[in-house]
Image 1 (spheres, rainbow, N blue to C red):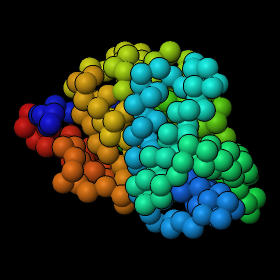
Image 2 (tube, helix red, strand yellow):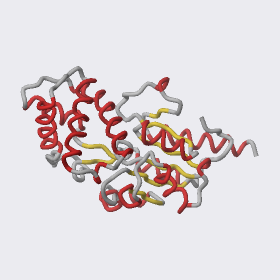
Image 3 (tube, helix red, strand yellow):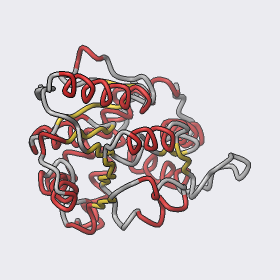
Image 4 (cartoon, rainbow, N blue to C red):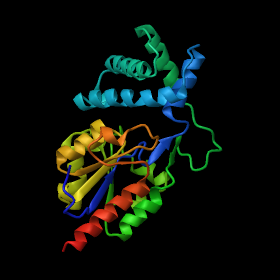
Amino acid sequence: MMSNDLPIQLVTLDLYDTLIELVPPRWERLGKALRSLGIEANDEALKQGDLAGEDYWTEMNTLHPMRDRPEEERGRIRDEFIRRWLAVAGIEVSDTEATAIRHAYRAEYEQPAHAAVPGLIDGYRTFGDVNRTMQRLRVAGVLTAIISNADADVTEFCTRLQFAHEMDLIVTSALIGYEKPDVRTFRAALDPLGIKPDRALHIGDQPRSDVVGALATGMRAALIDRYARHSASDHAVPVFLTLDSLVDHVLSVNKQVESLR
């Protein structure tokens, strides 16, 4: 745990499942793909299994970015991703079945979400607490930056989702050449803004990339649990359900530091 005797001058944020969400979510899309193949599945179980799949994906992406791997290798990893996801949901599949499910899921994943969903951009929407919480941090003098593992620059995407203007910096792994949890990814946000690691806090939804990487960099870290899938007792960092709670924490820390001066 990092000491709270220093102010938090910068909050860095993951993008996917932290600031924005896919509509419908991944587990509902996978459930629909499974049912199209005659496989019964429970969306709640798939929602929990999604964590195992995301952990595996992080491990593989950390070893070598997926975008730089040969297509055949990417296919094998994606099949294993599906197997691990389904295993947690109580569904065991063969290699052939995993490949068929992966193709059905990809087809479902690439389907545009319903056009009537307000604020939807390329199937994603911004969580309702994003702009107001970034504004609260700005008023308090705290800088904000996005650190995203993505295959292309996300600046224009964030602009279309109408919160890029709230950020002091947007860092995309594809542009800097390193993926979270690589320390260099986090330094790419700290160094341009002139902030020391122990004066910054990073929040994201993935323990193995967001939390591990931030702590290795010397930053403070927090986990955001948008879908209530984590137990706070399982983590050595604060777990927040909303960004409102995160900002309350940051402002409380800074108020306590100020009172000690």
